[in-house]
Image 1 (tube, one colour):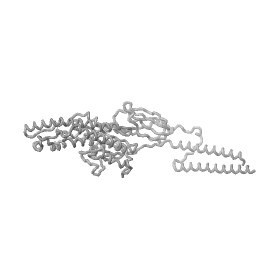
Image 2: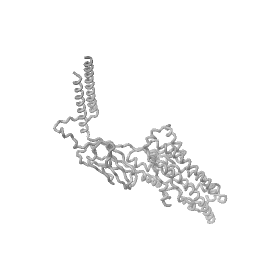
Image 3: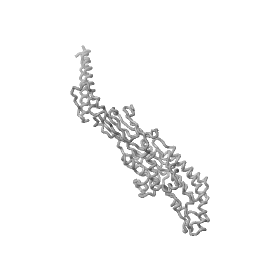
Image 4: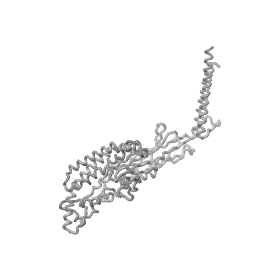
Length: 481
């Protein structure tokens, strides 16, 4: 065999191999018309924060400090997230501790930053963190110094200094440790709430007086009125710094950090609503004859008064208050899931309808949905609707890519659903040029297909090597001659 003959033989063999492989791939695609995948992973939730998150005062209250991760059924993180978990699956754990300030939460989160926590992997796999922190940074200072302020033993300026220092500490804790720790998983969502004012309508004048003596009643009411003037000044100052903490929370809203402004929500409530949603209500307190006699009114020793006042000035939400907070979270955190209702493998006609449904948890009711398909970054709008069920023609899904829905509220894009991966080939895209020829369908067993492909490929390689060996031998022989 001379050199020219060898070269021609290699060229013909290459053409034959290409033709065989290309026809094999074409036939394989005609057999498998569609393959659909959906994302069905559940939602892993962790609740962090103080007594509001822990559900202090509610039935079945269990604090994490008592070594349980079972979340109180009626606390806002559970009421908020349970519906999402019912729809999408998942779990919720509580790590909220009554009395926690931001610095204590930092201590709990540092092991995750340092990657030394025993449940570090579980923490990193969390999808949603709920966060309620900052109230104790301010209210603990108010509680510790209220008697001094009422008696005039501490000036407002001194009190403001303590509050200012606490705000600075919170800012450092929140921005440098808490949020970075909860953002270790870049795909996780942190839902942080602002702190409401629990004493918006609280006044000493609501305290009932029944000392069984008219003169004593008048004296006590006069003292309470004077104390209330100081209390309102203290409260006004306290809320200024509470709002500074809320501003820090608001200013740190980012793509993965959702801020739920509970403070502004509660500011819209009436006094009667506050009594329903917050436990603090001094009208529940009565200064009886016994309590009156235990207080040194002349020397302003009010310890016993404040002990009884504390029982009626509980800043925690009632069960209804927790529900209000939970529902407000839902309104600020809508989640949508797109489901493909039609089995694409059973489509018999390209004009057949393919149905989708949208499941929503949270948010308002007025949304517009736009269904898109993405084929190799070529995005096409398939349908726009306000309905939670929609359909398109099978022919509109031609291609290999994924589909999703973008959600609009008042013409503003507020997010999108999950992606649905699919492959669909039009039923009428058969090879009509060879209709009279018998088409050999390859088995659908994936392993057998792999063996066939491997066999053809190996045969081609072996044939190429043999021909190459012959060419080299002929070339060497010709050169020797």
